[in-house]
Each structure stands twice: as C-alpha cells, then as structure tokens.
Image (cartoon, rainbow, N blue to C red; front, side):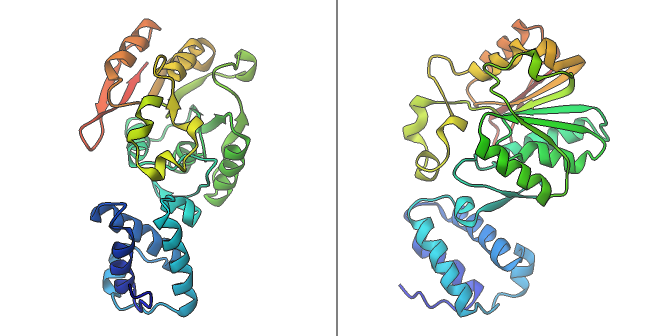
Length: 286
C-alpha cells in the first residue's frame, strides 16, 4: 500500500483501501467527507472543484495517524474530536454519544412544528449538548435547559455551547431519581433521545459503536427497555406546562409499546413518525 498520497483525490482512494474491511463504500465516503471538512475546511462541492488539492507533508502525517486509529475501529468523530450536527460544530469524546442523522431529523421536526418558538424547552439526557444547542441556535428567543447525569458530558456540552455562541442552562440530574426540587419551572417543549438499545442487541452493533461509545448512553435492560421514558412521564406534572409538547426519539421496534405508555400517562394527540429510512423513530404528544 502506498502511503505517499499527494492530493485529496489520492487520499480518498487510500482511505477506501485502508477501511474497506470495516465499512461499506458509502460509509467510507461519509468518513472522508468529515475528515476533509475538518482538516481542510472544504465541503464536498469545494473539494470537487479542487480535486488535485495538494496535501502538505505535515497534513499527510496527520491523515496517516487518523487512518491508523480508524483502522482499529475507533469512530471518526472521536478520532477528529468533533463532528457537525444541524449546522453546529459539536465536540465529542468517549464520554459522549456521537450525534446521529436520526437526531438531526428530530431537531428538524421540532423546528418545523414550532417556528419562532419563544417558550421554554428542556432536553433530557443532553450528552454533548447536541439537541439543545441546535435548538438554541435556530430558536434564539427560546429558553433552553438541558440535563445529563455525566459530569464529563456536561463539561463537553458547555464547551459546545460556547463554540456555537448560544446560551443553554446545563445542569446535572439523574432523571431516574430527580424530584420536583430539580425543576422549579415548567416547560412548553420536552425533548429526549434517551438510551433505548436493549443490551441483547449489543452484539449486533458495529465495532465502532459497541467498543467505543459510552454504554450508559446507549443501552437499557432487556426486561425494562422503556425505563427512561417511564421515568420522564412519571414527572410530567412538574416538568410540562399545560398543553406542553413531548418529542421522543425511540427504538424502531418500540413504537407501539411506547405509544401505549404515553397514553397511559394521559398524553394526548400521540403520533409515531418514521425517519428517512422508513423506520418508526419518533413519537410525539401533548
């Protein structure tokens, strides 16, 4: 294998050679897009206009080190230390979950259904602040609060808020235990992308998820997969204002059970919404 790639075009070919045993070609292209955007500040269109863009020896060494880490299965976002989410730059690390496309769809749904929103929003299980920061950036007159149980995740979230020049009130809380004293005000919109992958599915996940992302942000017990949704709904009377809205991301196979749970807690106008891949991924209600 020739490590002496000269141009960005050469690097793309090199990356495919190094990673083809781990990922399909389409995913390697996405990985390359993120690397080139982060390292060279070139989007795909700009790159296509400069296919022979010369890579300096210093950058080549940097890219080789990135490839070495990627070949071990480490997610590209952790290797680079950041990713992009809904026009926001989000720093990530092994203490935080990596933002997904589906969660971008959740943010997009909230923004489309609540244009110009000026009320109060809470994001439960914020991780690196992904949802809260994207909403704060696109709803500048809203008041955004976000909670998480992880000190390291909250530290990253606060850094990301500064990076994107938005104001979010972050604080530590365990939604499984937190009582009304944690929430002196009620919210008009509650959004959460809680852990929802049953532990038994861990073996089916790609190595870059299974071996590197934080288990506490991913997995739930097989015998209680809706544990976090139930904990949130149990607190709805001091979390949600009258006519408050709920937006949840969920496991594709849990729609029916979660819908039944929402209705049992008095949530009305429930809807199950599919993601761009046609999987039941979101549920909303009032």
